[in-house]
Length: 130
Image (cartoon, rainbow, N blue to C red; front, top):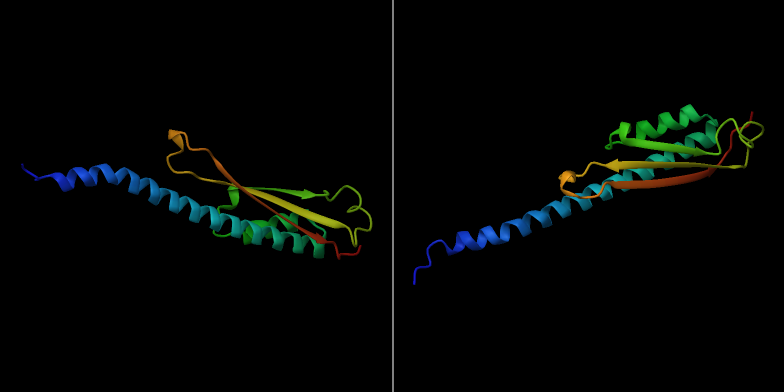
């Protein structure tokens, strides 16, 4: 019996499994980095909002601290909005919540992999006084 080429055939059978496992490891690592970066960014944005009570300052802080993520893929929501009570009067002591989500680019998304969306939120009591 001739065993020539057996190793190549076995490698060809195992290679797709190894590639799928490697891709899964990369995606899990990217997911973890995105979660940590987004949580840090929302905490910093909520802190900026607690000190300034300014939505533009909150969004600017969020965009500046979201690295290494792409800021254009981050969507944010601030509750309550700046023009609604209690933030439009004397907001000191009221809660400010910053929510953000990031759509993770998935390689091979065209083969049916779902989009991955990472979310984070942070809340702080407003210290700013008018």
